[in-house]
Length: 317
Image (cartoon, rainbow, N blue to C red; front, side):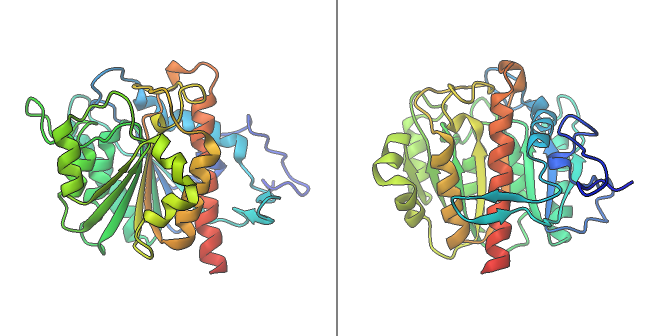
């Protein structure tokens, strides 16, 4: 029986298997045929305080069923555009995580991203803690240079602490060291950070443009888009704790004074129009801290709307 709306199953959000957006599941990583492929990275051994982001991919997938626009796309009356209509998106499942083994788990995440890139699809990775960004960036080693846009409460620019170089406080430092990363735009950075002052100095020396939420608001989403190098390929990394804990409490290190949804949607949509987004990760959703489910719904909504805008720009120039 057909799975569409016309004469077949209604297929409501609470029915069926919770793949991302109810898109097809492709377990064979050598057989990816899509424009976008979603990979779960349920790894949270890099956390310095509250763990639980290992359940992020599963919770975001479940939340995404609310936005499973399988039969008609998603019409946005403000933009007068239908997003995700006929979108070729697949869910390739999760990278295998080996408990207590950061390097092995990261290698498995990197292999998943490399498989997506080999298929010519856009990788969208759901974490997991922010350390999963490290293997994601490693997977781009054979690709053209690109700029990173980080949306986060924390700078994540620690070089090394007690020998730890691949935790969730290190990813932007590891990224900035890559010869193929041309610079970073870091927005939302605020309050008590995991990075000391010398990390901020090093970040700026290594090509970072750092803005707090208040600094972002002073120039607005459009103004911040203008600060991203025009035309540069962009890798987008989103830590859910960039958002205010009043709307996203389900994370390990919540920080008050954060973003609201439309600020970031407008920022990301603006980037999608000026730059080619080549990869996305969304991290640090820890659903057990949010019994309401609001955090994972925010994550799913942001990802689907971001993917929709990327594909819309591709189709319409």
